[in-house]
Image (cartoon, rainbow, N blue to C red; front, side):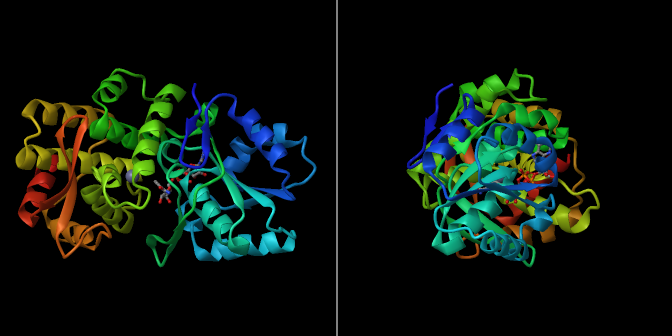
Length: 351
Ligand code: NAD
Ligand code: ZN
C-alpha cells in the first residue's frame, strides 16, 4: 500500500514497524522515549519493542489509560521524567497509543526545550483515521477538551493494522464513525464500499482511504479556515450529545457513538435546508442506526444540548453553524441553523 505523503511527513502503511526502526536508526537520536498507556503498554509495546531492541538507548514512559490522563498534570510528570533522563534537543518521542497518547505526547514533545522530534504510532481506529493526522496536539484543562495545545506536525506516522485486533468492539465503532463521515463528505464510492464491508475489524485498505481523505483536507487547510470545516459534519450536534452524556450517564457515549447520532440529525437538517434527497437521508439513517445502538434523548434535555452547541468553539456571533450534505459525497460548510431546526432534527433521531 502506498505511503501517503503529508506536507512535511510520510504516513507509512507497509511494514510500518520495520519502517519505524529504520527511521529511528537513521535519525541518530541521542535518546528515544516511548510514551504508552497501561493498555498499549500491554498489547502494543511488545510488538514494537521486539524490533527496537536493536537500539541501545530507549526508555518507556507509561501513563494511566483514558481521557483523565490527558491533563497538564500528566504533562508535567512526563516533562520531569524527560529532564531526569537527561533528554536533550536531539531526543525522539514515539507516541504509541490512542488519541490521548498521540495528542498529549505530541504536545509534550512540541513544547519540551521548544520542541523535539516526535512520531505517531496510533493504536486505536480513531487515532489512525483521525487523531494522528493533521498536526493538532493538546490536553484538557478543567474538563474543557483540547483547550491548550499546538499545531505541530510529527516527523512521521506509522500505521499498523494488527494493533486493532486487541481493541474492544466499542472502540472500533468509535473510529468507524469518522470513516463513515469521510465517505459522506467527499467520497460516495468509499461510503458504498464501507456499507458492504465487514466493519467489525476494518481492513488496513479502508483505513488507508480514510487517512488519504483526512490528509487531503487538512493539507489544503491546516489551520481550519475553510475546507477543514468539512470534517465537522455530525460534530455540532454530536459534540453536544457527547458532552451531555459525559456529564450525565454512568456509561457515557464514546466520541464516535455521539458523532453517529450527530450525523443522523445533521443529515436530516441537510434534507430540510439544502436538499439532500429523501432517499439519501433514509440510507444514512438506516446504515448508522444499524451499526450503533439507539440512545434515548428526551425533549427535556434539548435546552441543555442547545447550550452546549452554542458554546462550541466553531460558532461565531452567537449563531450555530453546521456542515451539511448536498448529497452523499458532497459537503457544504457554514449553514446557519435555528434552535427550532436543531430541535426538530433531534426529534427525528429520537423517533
Ligand atoms: P484513547 O487513547 O483513550 O484510547 C481508547 C482506549 O483504548 C484506551 O483505554 C486505550 O488504552 C485503549 N487502547 C489503545 N490502543 C489499544 C489496542 N491496540 N488494544 C487495546 N486497547 C487499546 O482514546 P481514542 O479513542 O483513541 O482517542 C480519543 C482522543 O483523541 C480524545 O482525547 C480526542 O480529543 C482525541 N482526538 C484528537 C484528534 C486530533 O485531530 N488531534 C482527532 C480526534 C480525536
Ligand atoms: Zn470526531
